[in-house]
Length: 175
Image (cartoon, rainbow, N blue to C red; front, side, top):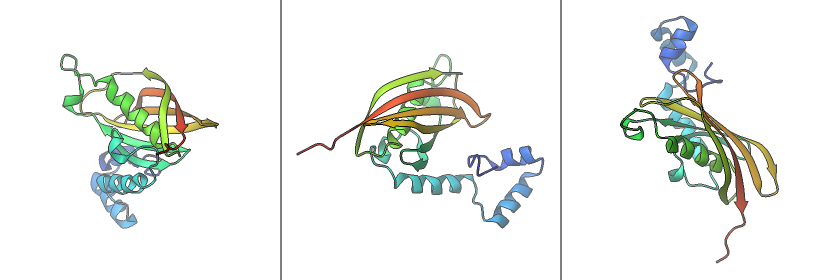
């Protein structure tokens, strides 16, 4: 289950497998599987070494996995300062920025820019949500990368946002 979704908590695993949390923790220890925070940290450190078109400081959220020109995964926790005061719904630009920076990160180019973004907000997101974005390069043609990004709420695995981007790589600038 952790291979398919490395962001599952011990509580979620216990509930899915109908065992106690203590059983999950013991089994994880015996199998040498770190707890969620450590798994996430290790994945993030490894992924950030592969970045080319964007700096790790520019990623909105935390980059967790990256295979250039193929796939990338990032997470973002929605905090109370990211939501609209009146409704408590997350401001859409956080999800857009998460998806856009992940799409840029997955491109194997020194310089890349977003050419086109087609987005769809599916359901409202509230403070406390842990979002998981997955970007997949669906096609590459010349200097254009066609990338689909889906963001899910990790609490219930519900799709909350989707986007299709065309990312354009540029030649290196001359000085």
